[in-house]
Length: 179
Image 1 (cartoon, rainbow, N blue to C red):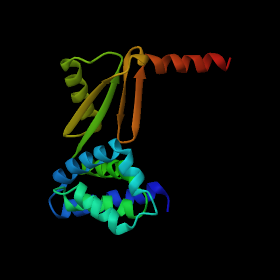
Image 2: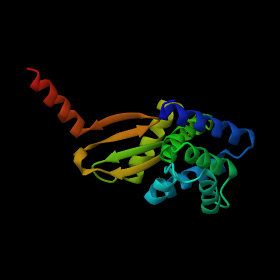
Image 3: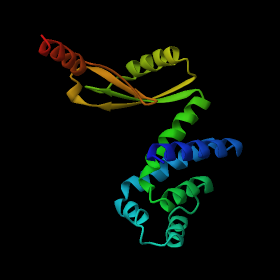
């Protein structure tokens, strides 16, 4: 089974269980937090992916590390560790988030721009995206990437819309090089 298939199945299952138990918001938040902790701790990842460590020791460490965290999220970490695939947590998070956003008719958009966007620009962009994507809620996260030169780049639901000067110059360069 490919890594993405495993992560998608786990993400889908987690979403369904959280929905059935009316804990979507909590699971979404805690899955994000757990993924951050795992991503920031390379020693934990190495330990969980080590086949020489007994599963029961890993489970005990996971229980101790994530006490107080939603049991469904903790179970996902245990499944990934048991399959020596703890690094798939980001793919599980991505799948869960996509399903959650679709269910709640919302989206989180990463907005990259050459300089910080003003509140008015962000609000206008948010309204345009709401209308264009027919969503009730759009959350924007603005990041500065000076290499874009101007314009912006949007990333959401595994899609990228690149309306930057850098992308336009690259397209012109590619056309010129084919002449």
